[in-house]
Amino acid sequence: MVATYVDVTIRNPADRQRSWTGKFLVDTGAFDSLVPRVRLEEIGLEPRGSRDYVLADGNPVAMDITIAEIEFEGEIVGGTIVYGEEGAEPLLGVTALESGGFEVDNEELKRLPAVLLKAAHGFVQGDI
Image 1 (cartoon, helix red, strand yellow):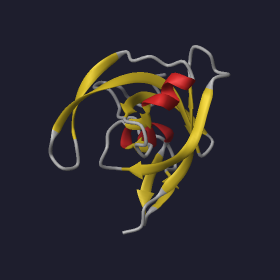
Image 2 (spheres, one colour; image 1 turned 180 degrees about the vertical axis):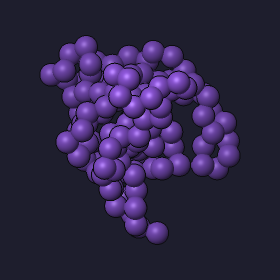
Image 3 (tube, helix red, strand yellow; image 1 turned 135 degrees about the vertical axis):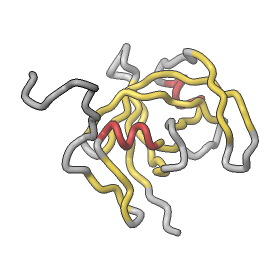
């Protein structure tokens, strides 16, 4: 299996001049994205809470989270960022991928023709 990497910029939404760019492993098994804590602190982000996660080895762990702008492949999305340990490999999770309109196909990012949006009950195309 070949790993897929993409350049990603994490930006502080309260001060868009403060950002960090790195190579992220595209991880379709992770909901949220992960960045080493030191990188998030460098751009002025602070934890906004904690969330329970299950690691790849099956162990549960509570981790700090924050909200940031995530920019990759010309798209900007807002997303939850998990505070990783020092030296942790940055991960781009599936919620950021889907929000940006991407999927992974044959180990490569593939832009979808449109971002998926399910119709609300009772909504009929043309109602807008």
